[in-house]
Length: 111
Length: 115
Image (cartoon, rainbow over all chains, first blue to last red; front, top):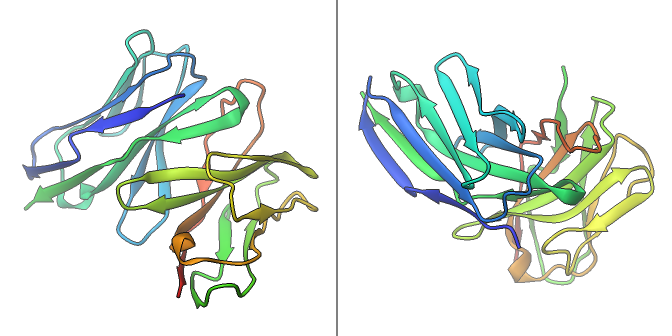
């Protein structure tokens, strides 16, 4: 059974510092990995999708890497801003279109 | 505007009173699914549907039913709600691919409280 873990569970950084969020999964037989952002009381917003054949994806200040063989993905957010404060979730998609989520990392960027 | 909508957004009900949470998407997506989110347990899949009239169980289907009579709608039915079904529910949709390569789009969530 696929298990997805995100460490740390919470992170607090001063504005301007780079953020590094980690995601690990136990079964490397995945189709893709997706990073989401969730604001309190709100739904999930997709940030980046990395196909299993890709090593990384970039969108603006966001960069996500994928090492399928070791079961790891990292989300980098450059020059963090208070507006980046949210919970970040990673999810892996495997056979049968099943999406398995990690527990999330709650990020606070202090002004 | 491309979106996934859910109704109601908030619901307080009592044990045993049947309820339906609706989900609708306007992106012509084949794949739709329901998740519940609970503190300490994260997001868990309840049911999913690969296309009209095709549904399957996720990780936590007990106590729930779904139907997919039309492509755009995927209602979640609780025939006899119990307090352990108090949770935040999300509907999601995506284009279907054999490789499962498409981004999932989520609705805004429905906060359900069962007394």
